[in-house]
Length: 139
Image (cartoon, rainbow, N blue to C red; front, side, top):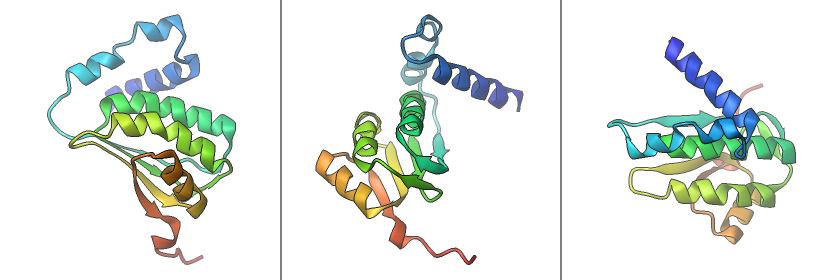
């Protein structure tokens, strides 16, 4: 369990430091892709609240790191409001390309109709499950 906590802390530091930091350049993230272990790793991201531009920036940075080592990334949008569907679609282009290989996938759950349209217009190759297709939660 300590290994997971250590990895989580390292990922959080890397996300805060950003792609141009000197410390990040010494990390071994690319080595993860070269030395892919046998098995399967699915990562689930579930943003909550409004997915505005600052939150979108954080999501994009997380995806950059996770796409290197994950076989499948699931982004569950059911607890969020997508305020900039076009910006989200554009920011998903690169990770979607990275995961567009046999045995890999980017899956979006709870996709609002506006975002689905922007994904189509931008030509982003992702698997989606529309918000309307999800069962209603009794409240």
